[in-house]
Length: 197
Image (cartoon, rainbow, N blue to C red):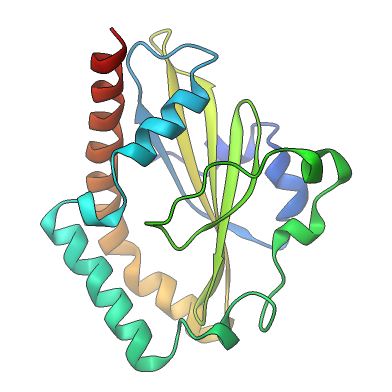
């Protein structure tokens, strides 16, 4: 379910101190029935076990394949467009306590680098020719007593082209990608509960 940006900005996440030059693009919530305060690591493991883009719906997979094809054609994903060349990782901004924290689970199916992982939040980032983006996952109490997963996408577009790119893909994110991701992650959590009950 899509949430207002204040659902992310009003909470005391550590990511705020690292991303003052980023803007909040999207905030989304995922229901995790039966999840309690200490289940954040289990939810992250379940969502990763549920698969990456290859396990999404056919329309979402088509959009990801199209994006990678266009990226290859126009050079958006060249090494020179990413970390160390065009942008520096937000890991370089980490205070000592976050630098000492675990980075979080590696996910070979996603082009996102882990930044840090804490008991109730984690962050990953990517950089290419269009944007420098951060995916922040947070763990918050839900309305019905369960906890829910919140995802915020923070972006720093690469100039005017990056801003146009983000505007162009917005309808596809809201109508195809995020609903498919919601079904995948919520299904993965139910499968995890079935294995552990």
